[in-house]
Image 1 (spheres, rainbow, N blue to C red):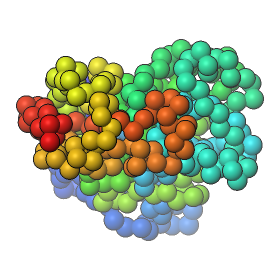
Image 2: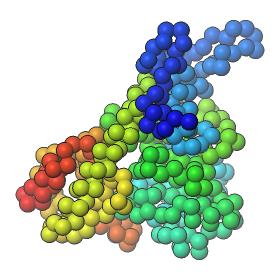
Image 3: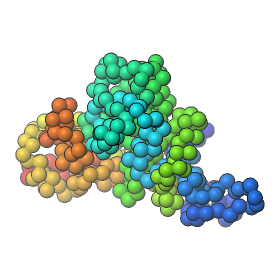
Image 4: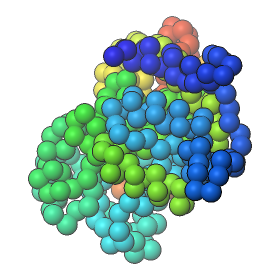
Length: 361
């Protein structure tokens, strides 16, 4: 078995036996000819299956050690696809510190009477809340934006005791740093827009199932509802995955250097960094200086996404988590002094210097 770096670098190679093309061809056709009545090449309609997308999905399933991957048009469509597996009235337990877009969607579904969502802070609270009536537990680890980690193996054990599905958002760490399916999760989701593609130019989502039966349900649901990722975006996704390991190694090293430096700065109240990956949050001493700090940045970009080669800083209070009511946000630590930092591949000294000069502006 080849190593993951080799799998990534070789993804899509040797697929075109006729021409020997090294770069995987892009199959743009939406329809495919049938050899005869009741016969198929394996491809009928591109919403159902596409040759370029198939290569990507097989590669992602292998990376996450899963049985089946489905790629979608965005991270949120991936979440929607997963929730479509569950019947109306299902109950879900969700990590309290969760991406604002997920909260917004869950809140709307609950208001419409489709599902019920209850939030938990840690493993102890999860254990007290779970019952046989809970359909699934939805976990972000590290959480967004407080960077809290949860023991996935322990959560999986709790879920298995109640025949409850475990869904893990693995966007922040990627399968190179964390493989939830190996720890007992049933489903993994990604905003493929972030680290997996990593250049801030592709919108995509990913769902990977642990077992084939669940994977078949995902494929059926995807074909039925159509959150399809285009062949060109699939090709860009494959090309981007080839450098994932190189990018993440550099981003993580930069994040570790930045976290160490900022933890000693007098204008930084707290650095929230789990020690791995390239996401962190910082709390500054004076929240009234957030605007001037953001305006003074020269290397970092003040923007809402993450995981790209360029370093970003996000202000969750008015951006990614604005739909979470203020009293709820602040009750668990998402306060107005917090900034979320996505560390890129630039020279670490330039990143450190940029934040320091912005703090002093």
